[in-house]
Length: 131
Image 1 (cartoon, rainbow, N blue to C red):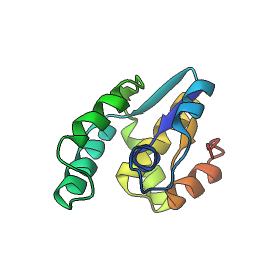
Image 2 (image 1 turned 90 degrees about the horizontal axis):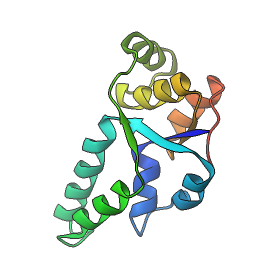
Image 3 (image 1 turned 180 degrees about the vertical axis):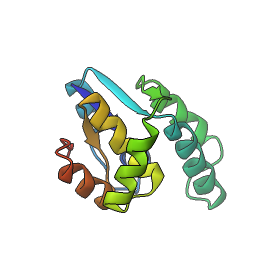
């Protein structure tokens, strides 16, 4: 089965002071890990903001990016736009979160997230969620 990984789950794994999921264990249980193209920018933005705040030392962002890229996450670039809007409206999600949910629905995938609103929407849409 495929796993859709959102930025909150990814950051929960890579940041030492965050609660997170056991990503290596989840990866071992799923044939592929996918995410919307947005994850590329979200990860880098989170890392640079945390570097500026002194939460991670300079140079750590590149190491984290290398570790994440080693996971082989496939970035999806073709969301179903009308579905994304519909999900955002019905579940009061940001478009960013609706992208992850739409991808999980389209691929019949499990969703890994630490975002309560996104997890609630996934459950309402009968999308399996990773704990």
